[in-house]
Image (cartoon, rainbow, N blue to C red; front, side, top):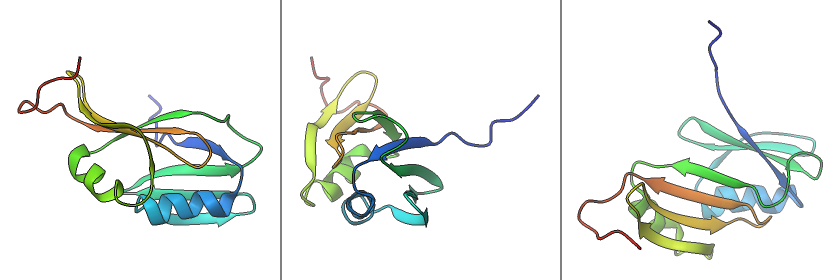
Length: 120
């Protein structure tokens, strides 16, 4: 059987420099590569492709699973990011949402917390 080697989101961006700076400076990603109007930014072996203007659609939702959403929220919430949903505990995830410079929704989450009531 053929094995899937990876799955990678491609996000359409209006300005590649602005988007790369957001992911690197605000979210702590590294720029893995850049060629022409595309770049790859990543963390911990996972990567998002950013594509200037000709692939993907504005407003894409992207789930990014973390080992500790609370700790990551504390890090990034002080970095002038657009918080769409503050840290919230649901029965299915402990999560928060950010909106990147191109309107993509970044949904960061980890396992739900047993010590915090669930949102209704």
